[in-house]
Length: 381
Image (tube, rainbow, N blue to C red; front, side):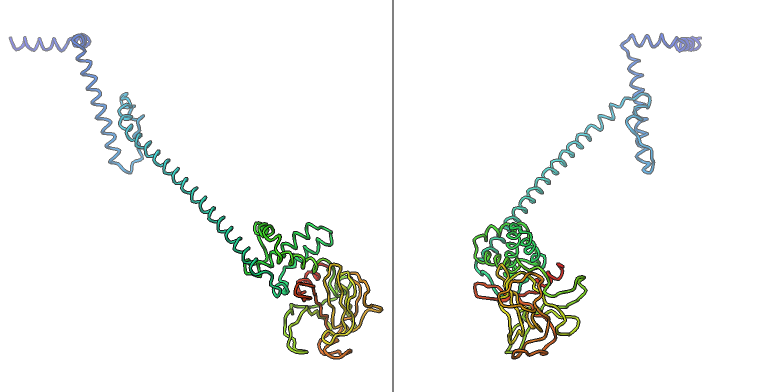
């Protein structure tokens, strides 16, 4: 009887309404509410740990556990995840700050290196220019080098064109450039045929009162001011062909060993009295007649003072006399093979025209290599 009475009491307690039971515990200090809440959170934490551990074990899985997914597990808040990652975020921010500072330092050092290198280049260029200037002042003008006339055709053409156009600025600019190039090349201070604008400006200013510079510039003006045409008539359509080379300073032995002082121009046919020699410039007939080495020759003094020499003629133009004025393109005589003997000697060498250029210089009258001038005149027409 007592046993049955105990079961009856237990059944009565269990069969009580759930809400009444919860109400009883709630009224005793929310004990049951706290219990169920903590129990639920514990289950959620265990579930999340299980999911995360599963993901870390499965390295090849494409599943990613994010804060949002974790928050979906029975409404669990993302606060825990954010608290866990807050330390990493601080480290990332610190690392980013360090990288930014390192980049700034690297850029600063790079800029300083560039500035120092540019300063060094400027210093070396300035030192090189001043060293070259002192070398030019020391050595002056080498007349043998000047006589070789190692100027490009383009420079000769620019000086000549300036005179023909009455463009004084072009003449001064181009003749000055030719003088600077000659002085630099003479002393081995430049390679090639060009000088930078910076160097030209420096030397033009530094050498403006230098004797060698002024002398050279004046020589170039005299030599190239009046040349206009190729010294042989090539016909109206330039159909008559001639050949020539740079024979300057080649050895000649008639009358003793000596050097050739001109350019020899040869026709296609070795025939005397056929090809017309014409004046390359305006001028005055200063010399005419026989020379042992030059045969029948004509010498023309140009308006600016150059002396142009035409040798080995077969005969002269009719009535051409000493003191006559001539214009560029005027007929002077026929090409021949005269010379190397007493007057009238012919046939000692092939038919050709010996063309020479002379100028009155400080050492006296000197010859200069006319090859580049002949090339310019040939290409000009």
